[in-house]
Image 1 (cartoon, helix red, strand yellow):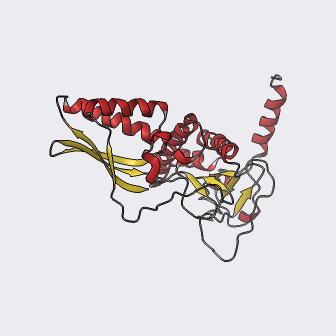
Image 2 (tube, rainbow, N blue to C red):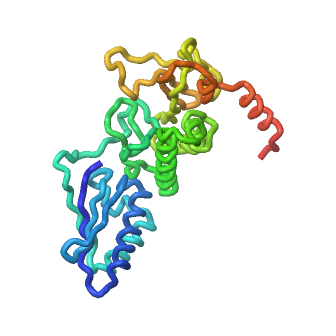
Length: 285
């Protein structure tokens, strides 16, 4: 992410709140397209409206990365202020060239409560791929925006350790939860668009003191322990578990005390049997 300032312009004869609404509507569409990320801050300074935002990459403001709604909002901003927004990069360390998926060994979908980067991560630890650069239809770029927002909310709830702690954790650790199913569907779209194998990450906090590495893939029940390279131990992207069939990756549990929470996210014969029965009963398309 690149810290940037965008200058919209002066008040002219328009109501300040209407101008602010127009600018904010434009920034919202940029966020949904993966052009900007995280929080943005709007303020009037010396009679001119400006905002501080995190750009996905230097080229993220180019018109080719705008959705149709984004283009409409940009036109309304230009009409209201009499000119298009002026962007200025404030980050001295901003890379000249954005990361690419083309040379990645694989991709995986992951975020967390405090993450402000793209959730589309490279499987070699290099910078994540800006969503606006992926050859995806805007529909899926927007779905990635909402998926990341939901995942971050759930992670916050889990970290707060309140009444919904276990319910939130189940959403993050169970491959059949709503957020996991949505994420896995998005992984399929990303893989189809890029041609790069794309995995969904499953959280694993509570593990088993014995047999943790012998766990079966929670998707298919097959073996899924991965061989971790020795040269870079401890790197997040070197997963303990990886199933090529189900496109799932994970780590061993952090708290290896066992207990009933260790069952969350593990392979369940009953769930698999029910899914098989449902497929048999479903009418042919």
